[in-house]
Image 1 (spheres, rainbow, N blue to C red):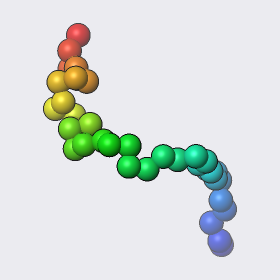
Image 2: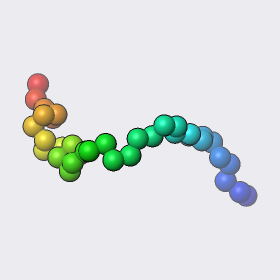
Image 3: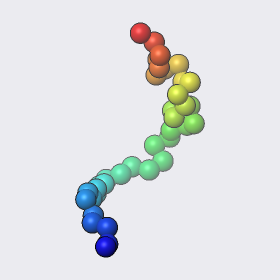
Image 4: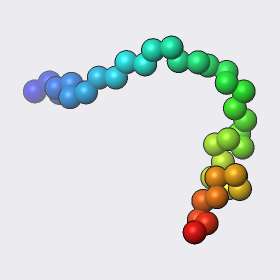
Length: 37
C-alpha cells in the first residue's frame, strides 16, 4: 500500500547566508578538535 508519513518537521525563522565557509563544515578543521581526547 501507500507509505505512511511517520514524522513531519517545520523550520521557522531559518537564516540563510550566515557567512559560513567550507572550513566550517570540514571535519579536518582543527577548531573542532575531532579525535582529541
